[in-house]
Length: 276
Image (cartoon, rainbow, N blue to C red):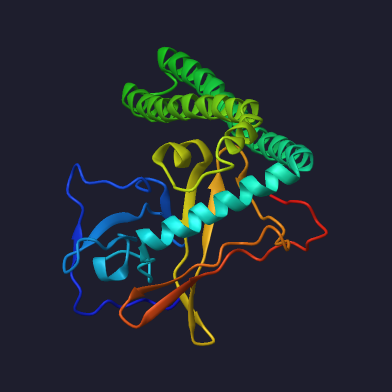
């Protein structure tokens, strides 16, 4: 990754109460941390997000993942408009494939979580049995009181951790079931924004789960930056780039002398309908 350097330009972290509609939605594609919202101190009209986990801040991420809010708005609105147009033209195919993908993905995820839950419950029952035997051995004089206390604490600590994990896994299964049940609501939400001309917090909340921001890279002399949009219920979607439904073309002078171009994920062949 090529780290963007903004020599001589100070940044100011947004104060409490200062927020942006993208706050909480943007994550670093490399380290997974939430991007932080900033103002350019020389020009407060310029707002942007960047990764807080950079090596310069004693973190692990080698790139800043700097992205201007105005650039972000154009790209995300363009992608949402492309999605709504595609759904309006191919709604039946889109619905069928999205529901199929969602059900398969949710079933696989639920199976994995259920497996972990079953193992945790089995170990919890095993600890109950071990504790009973430990108590009986202590009463019978087979083990000392000191050893009984030490082993009891060990089992109790493990069991407390297990029961916390069991509670979390059960909540995760409920979340998966709820997510699968509401997948069909996504298309209804998409239909509402067919004629959208401007992004709104409500639109982002109803349609988008998160946006992965990739580090801008220089390819053949041109700075390019990818965004991976994860939509609610259905995740990241790759649409075919047809003659009538093309990915948004956005290029912006984000810093003096530096132009950044949005690079969408590789489109599917026009003959295909949709993939997720």
